[in-house]
Length: 252
Image 1 (cartoon, rainbow, N blue to C red):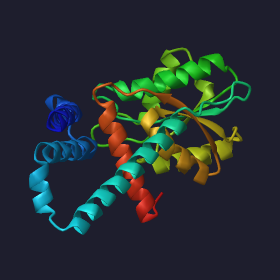
Image 2 (spheres, one colour):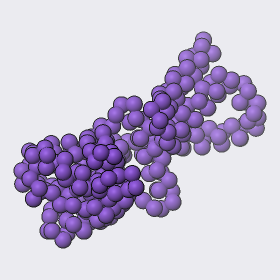
Image 3 (cartoon, helix red, strand yellow):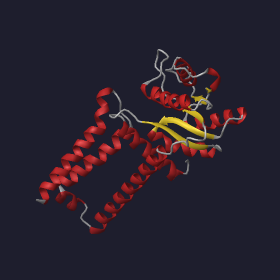
Image 4 (cartoon, one colour):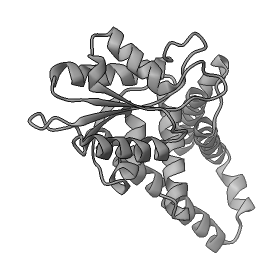
């Protein structure tokens, strides 16, 4: 009975690993896909061959040390994911218009927003169309593969959706999340805009964006949007690993 349960659990681990790696067939591969798949496949191997791993880690103290390390790492990841989910759910209050900051993302070669950027623009539009007194900072520079700045793409798309150009400020020099928030904070202070900000970005991105916003003197709220179902788990895993690394190295 115990062996059968172990086999079922190992099959589930393998299936989850395959799910994390599924975007490979779309030409996508990043660390957030690799490390969960590696952990899950390792767990499957241990479940399928527990006796082998007991012999491999023969001293009892070594097995206990490995088990403790695994438990600490799992707890750290779960706590980080919980904090990320909490930040994603930190929605702006209805009675206090915020300055919307749209964090840039890839622009297609034809100048249109990628799917991820379009979702962020839509989240900003939904808020701006309800709160007509609110304004927006479109944030994002330009890389070698983009025909225009991400900020300009954001602005042009919002204008085409019916948002008045005068409600949109450009920040088109940033190349990272840290710079997105730092440079947007400069625009907000220069223009005398509310320092309560609603950040239009993916849900998994809200915790890190909120940390940078607070460092720049802003009060962050979330206009989080869901990622594509097939890509979301990998993005959440990658972001959790990045946050833990930054916390350990003191760069967060």
